[in-house]
Amino acid sequence: MDQQTIQELSSTGRHQECLQACQQLLQNEPETPFPWKYAGKSLLAIGEFEKAQQCLTTAHQLDKKDPETTKDIGNILLNLGRTEDATEWYKKSLEINNNYAPAISNIANIKRKSGDNQEAVNLFKRAIQADPQLVQAYVGAAASSLALGDLDQAESFAMRAIEMNPYSPGINEILGITFQKRKKLQQAVECYKKELAINPKSNVSLLNLGLLFLQQGKAAAAIEPLSRSA
Image (cartoon, rainbow, N blue to C red; front, side):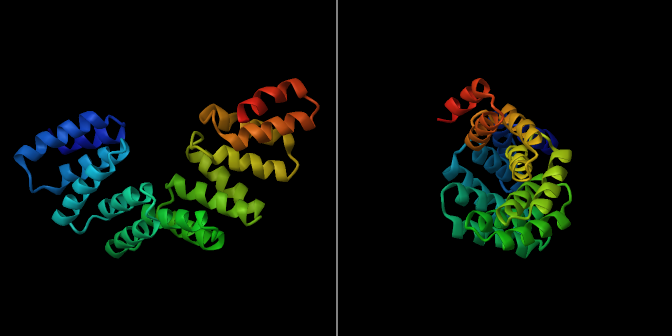
């Protein structure tokens, strides 16, 4: 089983097959970090956090120069609610590569969730500079800009994210809120509809869409999103 096949199985979400392929490779190459890393990635994806941490820790011990492995260990700890420990592992990624965009973006997200939106925006911008294709950084930057009340910047980041991936969860909702605050109500309605096509359980989009329909005098149309929200 070659490394390219394993990477393909991982990137397409075929995690059980990826795990089996990694196990086969480990029988012949137990000291190679690659199968440990990708086994860890698949275990992380399916929520087997303890096993994932064991595999990724082994991968890190075998190759201390891979910032992706330390970032993924951080992701496990974040999933377990250990935010400070996760941050330390993201910082280890940056010690390996100071411009490793996913780790910068993940630290920015932690800042955003703690309410430090200005620092978050600065970090998201740094992540975008390091990797202009990192969609999550644009989404985070848009959300933090919105929280700061900078509607121009929020819209700009949101539009760039949508150009790159219109199906990224949360981004159409952020754009909808931006349009709603600007009283561009029909554009806001369209954005909330797009968000709900991607994420039907988004409470904010359901509630905002229902209230917009009420404002437009469309009481019958408002019932469905509001009842789903409730």
